[in-house]
Structure formats: structure tokens, C-alpha cells
Image (cartoon, helix red, strand yellow):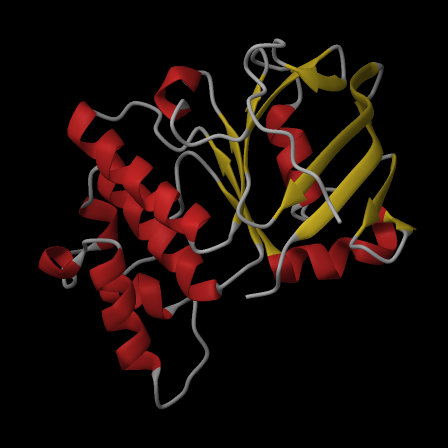
Length: 226
């Protein structure tokens, strides 16, 4: 896993006459969880897709530690090292084991890695179940385990606990905490922000196309780079 340190600056994006992002700035760092709030339509999902190299901004730069570069020169690198996880993860035809294997290249260790991911996500009992038959919480666990197999530097999670019951939410939060402890950079976009009180380090708000602290008391830890 590549140690994450990404700085996005001046990200701008418009859809026709509607300017969704106006010079938005945000940082990701290894082992740090950023919680992002914002109203529906504020551009949170658009921002996450841009950060993952999936959607082209109108303008913006990315710094990996060697100085800022235009987004267009970084998109392939972002796609390799940052994963975007939608709130309704896509499930391929086939069972849970097959869906995990989709994240891996062919190799001698594939079965071992899939077994490790099943254990990490608490999915052993449903390894042979059709992935599309899983509940919302189980699908999210499978998506996280699949992402864990990819070993990105950062994960961007769009409403990862939406519409979950208490038990499923607790399980998902435990997996997110494990990812953070392993050194992944996490960015979580959510309306249910109180669920992440014991997880986030920095809390930000996206409004009027710009990013700032959600409120002075919410930003508990300042990430300092050497």
C-alpha cells in the first residue's frame, strides 16, 4: 500500500450554468479520516469522483508531495491509488467469493487472499451466496473487503452507512476503523455524521462550492505534515 498524501487545490466543476465546485481544497493523509458534510446537490459525490480520477474537473491541481500538477496529468495515478466506494456498491453476477476475486489478478496466492478478505470482512458464512442476494449492510462489507484486497492508498466512501440497521452499522464502522488503523487515508461523505464521532480526525463542510471547517468545535485534530 502506497503511503497516502494527496493535496487537491482549486478544484472547479460546472454543469452548464450551475457551478458545483468553486476552487475547492482538500487534503488526504495516511491514517487520517476526513468527514465531509454538505447538503444534497452540494457537489460531494462529484468531488469524490474527481479525487478518484473518475470525473474530469474544469480546473484543479493535485500534489503528491513533489509539487502541484494539473489534474489531467494525475488522473491515471489517482485511479490506481484512490478508490471511490458508492453508497450502493455494484455487485457482479456470481457469489461473494467471485466478487472478491474480481479485485485480484490471477496468481498462486489468489485463493489465500480471498480467504483473508472473507475473514477480514466477516463474510465466511456467506462466501458461496449470490452477491446480489445480500442485504445492504452485507454488500457494503463485501465492497470494503474487495477494496481492502486492492490495497489503495486512500478510500473515498459516499454514505457508507446509509439505510443500515444498528448491527450492520456497528460492523461497518468497525471495518472502517480497522482500515484507518492499517494506515489508509479515508474520506467519508455522510449526512449521518454523528455515527462517525469516534472515527474522524477532521470534519469539513462543502457549501457554495467551497470547503471549510464544519464548525470550530468539530475539527478535533489538525493534521500536520513534516
